[in-house]
Image (cartoon, rainbow, N blue to C red; front, side, top):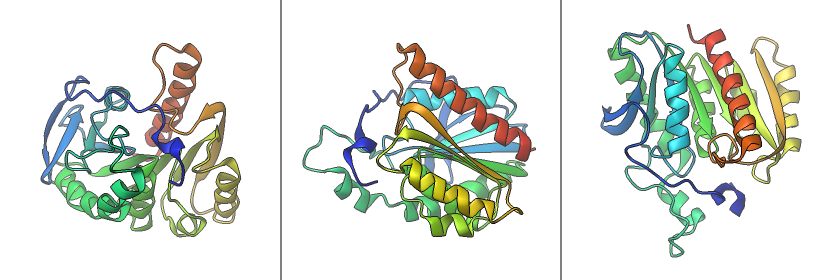
Length: 239
């Protein structure tokens, strides 16, 4: 995450958004939605703006409607990135919220989900969250992963992942440009034992899947296409 693009179009956070509710899961405030009787769960791991972003919660509701129990933990402990706080630029904020800590925090979350009777888990990571997902995939703590405009993920990470992976990227992305995503694709092609695909969406920028303008029909259409692709992947592998 090496430029301002990751910080553009910040959402207006709303703790009351979504049709689900917030409860403690492994000690973390977590937006949960979907049938608690489901044995299939999806973890949505947010970008730097955190779990109160309305478009992210709307997406969680959509995934839940497909039959999943969905959890969106607050890995930032009530401290999402705030662009207006000029005393704490994103690189300073990241020192307090590294993806490595996010990965460690997912382990008890996954155990908490399993204690509810969940047997299969998928995870989708948005920007910051993609690095957490790749670490989960290396350890096979999930059954499938999806990256949406990833940050921090290296080619070496892709070489080590062990679960089916879908990568949804943007044509205009200075954080993970198409050239990098094509490198992911080349590596994945050498690993036929891991089902995967890379898709680069035209005419969209980093963050388009959750930081879109709801009044912009084209932006909504592109975001919804990515949501459908994500859900199709989970339907295929998280059953």
